[in-house]
Length: 177
Length: 345
Image 1 (cartoon, rainbow over the protein chains, first blue to last red):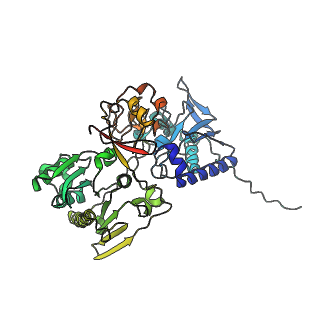
Image 2: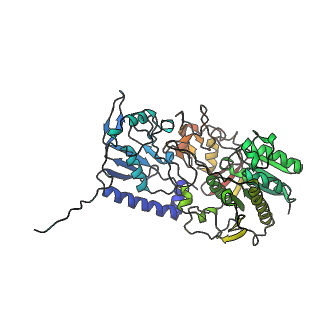
Image 3: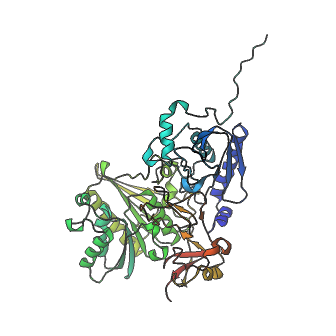
């Protein structure tokens, strides 16, 4: 059974994916930060474009803010039964400087991922990482130990972007004159 | 009713006590033992081993004991995780599962269903003196392990990741007595399944024995229409295709596309610990380990392929199946046909 066959014949996976698309697009439409693109052929299924502040390190070693990050998200055919965060996520933006993002490889680690976790949850988790709202503080199991040290020494600068991913409606009370 | 083949997976507390009971069943002529571990001193307290077994692979230690019990018994020892064993090497009459990992149980459920083979599973919970035995008999209507799983079960599956954690395991803290109780119940159950006594077996049922309060409970399980497992069963044909002597190109000429059931091909392997990278087409068996630090290598985002065709195989077409990681007994498919690789007719 191959990827395509499974997609054609597994109604549970099919309905799951349809729901992810709907919910993901709904989130993107309510966000000033997130754009979501759907790939017609997997992988990847989705490319999430985050217009937020995050950190990158350039070739000279200087750390500075960037304002766009692209992340690919692939849902393998057996995703509802087992999840491998390394296989599912790929960071397309080079040079991201973060304890949970490798500088050598296009790998981003969002930690434990339960099989069947929704696309929206993953989008939130990736956003929290890119903006340093969430990061792994332990050097010994970090993907970027230098970033770990940097984060520990620069906690006052974190997170680098505090905006919520989803636009919040203004709760204005209008009083008649 | 003779010449039965039982595959026993897991040789810890329960498995080490079940193995000799299986060997003493006169209708069992072959036992395959599967476990990747070796015995440690701490195992002496609860497992059916002796001090001289410490440091020895579990499958070897138990195989030796079984041969002493019954010299005519054919014993095959596979020092591997069940997920890594070529599916065709696991063709048998029944699986007996004494695993302590939910992920491994999930894999065995899938394997048993694909091979259309009944399996019996047990578990113990030392803190509450509980013993559990389940059986599953693949059919169009019967329940599988995952039919009873909800989000909570999937959320506690062991998972390996780099940042902030790693593999989580849940020790059962069971005594040898509790393991022995589970092994005895399992042996009775395996006997029923081998005789085809399905009505009296625990197929699609669960037996829980509460040894603390002397209670026994049997629960029926139903096929879950929303089960995440697809319950497919294979029709497997033999295919004489020695992996050492068959090129990828020759296999693709026959099959059109090549998929190895239970595995994916990896085009880009990375060690999550030392970041050593290996770019070569190979089957990503979990046993693929980093040559530098021995950690299990992973496939980076999108570096894995469910199936190969001529285009994807590209420069590796002239490699043999063995060179890209296939082994005798692997079940390969192209389209909907499943074939078991054989060395010779």
